[in-house]
Amino acid sequence: MYTVNRPKVEITSLSDSMDILKSWVDSRSKFLEIRELAPYMGMSQYDIYNHETKEVVDSDINHYLKDVMKMDLAFNYFQNAIFKMTTSVFIREFFYTFNEVKAKWATTQRYSTQKEMIASSEAVLDKAKVDKAFKEFEEYTDKYNKGEITQFDHVREKMPLAYQVNYQFSCPVKQFIKMCSSLLSTVGESSVIWREFYASLYEAFNTPELKYWLDNLSKYLGTDECTKYTLTRNDCYSEDIIKSFNHVTVGPVLYSQLIRHEGLTVLGYPEFMKRYISDNSVYNCSHEFPIVFHASKSRILQIIRTRTEWFAVYDDWNSHNTWAAILREFIPEGADVDSYKRYLKVFNDKGEYDVTLAGVHDVDDSLRLHKGYTAYLPNALVLEDRSIVEERIKRYGHNPVTDMYLQMFDKGYVKDNPNNPYRIKWNNLKEDK
Image (tube, rainbow, N blue to C red; front, side, top):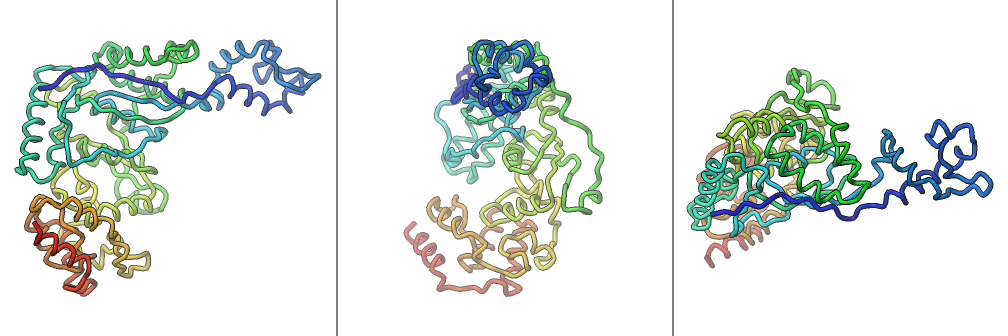
């Protein structure tokens, strides 16, 4: 049914710390010319600057590098690397929680599944539970392939958290060490999660310099990231600086998307990790947990306008694993389009309707991905076709966003147009089917 593989960490594109140090010291040559300042730069016992030639010399710089690494200097964040990771989904989301990680959005085809299912050993805490999770995931995958389930998002909720995935990100080496130390403080040194993951770290950190960071991991132990906040919603609307929500409930699928947005800080995952360790019932992506998220109000508005686009609102409005969990905080049942138009991307900043803002790209995607009844419907606003809104509601049910799309037609913002070229293309495609 599935195989179990160990996690793997690979370090590539590692910048040379010695070259960085030489450049860093050279940039401070004006200070080095003043002998009295040497002690303040930690250089008094090293002969790394020739005051006659005014050049950096190499005689003692290796020893100096070791001392510099012990200091809390900006230099120690200059050395960057690309970390190629093979871990469980469970561990991946932990690393992506950090804003310092520069990672790409998923480029995998979300409408297909892997033939071979692999579990990552660090997340296999209870084999019986993991067996059950993979069996259920396999059953849902088969139903999707047979057309019995029309949206892969419903299959993803059944994905085991132990499912092994490949990903990569770049960040300073010291920042990666700090993230690893936070993982250690979250899961505990004696846990299976840490023992299996640390083994992969030890293999990857295979130079004396990198080993130094690993051997001193405990010095960078972070504090508990899950601070309990007590801000109220009323506190958050006064200024366009920071908006905060206290304990919005989400699932791992939605959390995975939230943390990949720039300018958005999300807290709460370490507590979920501790629950995973202590509660054997937590084993797939359907489980919910509370988070706190912070962003500027303008950034939140931008995210909401994107997530209320036609292409994005197929979600189950009552789910905690879709963007509805966030949209529910802003758009109530029975919302009037004129009162909430700022949340719809088809209105410009002046509140004027502009169909070009709706995004023609998702129409082409819908046409390309059309597979009969299971396909996503194209954008009704771009096609100027009210019946497509009605069809969507028939398939997926009412929610405040789709109801506002109906109001777009009923209030005359969009005119029904049988001669729309995209609409003709869509109708021809349906006839071919």
